[in-house]
Image 1 (cartoon, rainbow, N blue to C red):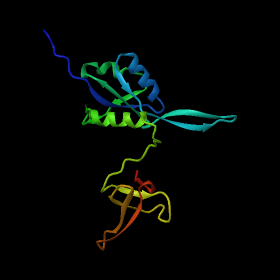
Image 2: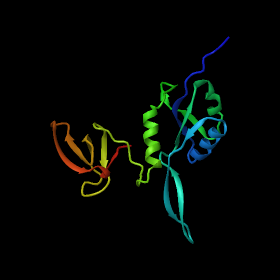
Image 3: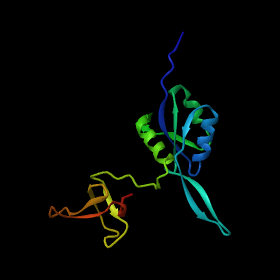
Image 4: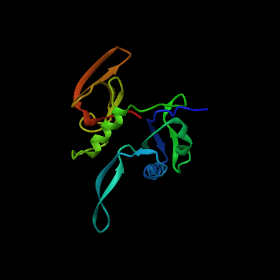
Length: 169
């Protein structure tokens, strides 16, 4: 009986803390296309400065494989789960993985940034409004931040630098 091999897709792999590089290496050694976006930072040691690579998304790496190769992924030391919806692995669109790959291979300075979307509850982390929580109604270089008094159904908004707000955890 002949089976048609499934087309490989990109999946987000959650790893144990600080196991991203190990999982990535194991997957690559098993002939699974693996991608771990890294950023390089200068760190000071007791006697010198050193360039150190850190995962752009701590706790995650990406792998491209057909579903029948999942057991090879599950057996990697440090593997936690393949992300998905209702327990079913959900592919990451190729264009998103390629966009991140272009970012990390460019010469542009790159920093991790909290995932923000309009309608999300956020907290101001710098400036005169530090510690204030509200709702992000517009994002971009400047974020429109709204503080509401629900009981009286009134609100006030202000524009802030987008780097000064983070999602409420």
